[in-house]
Image 1 (tube, rainbow, N blue to C red):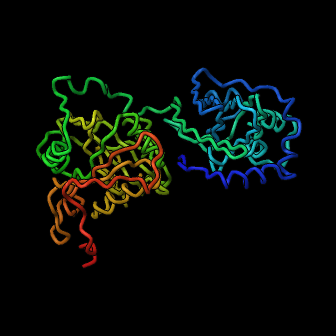
Image 2 (cartoon, helix red, strand yellow):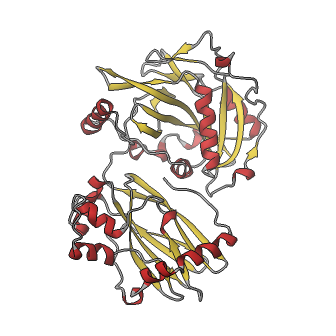
Image 3 (cartoon, rainbow, N blue to C red):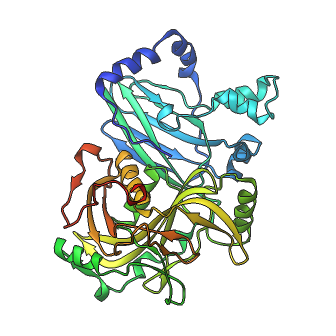
Length: 428
């Protein structure tokens, strides 16, 4: 998970004072003679901002094992390679906490490599220590090395934060990491609709189109309805994934033998499986185009959502219809091994998503339309697995931001509807 923050310049001076403390100065000893650390693979990504250029790469589990001689991923350690080129005339400092606030130090990584042996192995510790990413980047120079982070599979998303005298740089990266069978890799995004099926709509057309969408998802046969379609999203495919990953959401694996096994073992042990498959639900006669989830401690507790691309385009951007719910339990089935019980208050989960994206600076605009139909607490409807749900009948329309957007800058767009402000029906 990455944190989208804006470093204030007054804070920069305090950070530099801390970095230039005696302890930090000692850590910098000998940096000028350090050899350049080569990238782990050719899957490098480059971002530039003013007079700073940053190149990054993330080794897969197998590549990390070859580089460091041990299965670091099995120890929840993922090396991230970074090169910072300082093209300016002021010294800069790299802040690894922006990449992962719980990163591992090089010697700590070596310690975990040896199964937490209390013996400090000077050979392997020096190897890890020598490959670390240094903090200080002198004017007109470059530094490269590894930061040892917690494991993120699928797509690794992180910030690279750099500060200097009265200046701050923040660059965001989204890097594919081989190893998972992600469901959205199988989607032919360009050919879901033909050119003559695509419809550009204005605001009135957007409201009318979203209101006319089905109330709920369907089973494969298209006969029975289930969870409500309670969200809509406006954004490019890349913006959708980047916005949700910025907020800490994970991609989803396809359903195959190994992912089913991991799902079952996670359910039995109440452990976390961040990329657990989701069952297929249907809109427009097809299963979801995208599925994302946010774990909450174990597989029994997670928020998950499904999205379907519609033929509508608003201001040139794709419009999606979707469903979000909160898992509060799990039960076993013969067909899918496990299925989840959802929180019946689907509006609360909808509003959680709004808040989550807003705090992650992923939300540029927000509005609401109807289309689900009001379902009272006393007379709930059931989804396809028999779980009850109730709702005020509205859909949150989320206009995503390609760049971090401050929460105070979110545009509240009047689409004709707003959620009620009286206490929840569950409390009455």
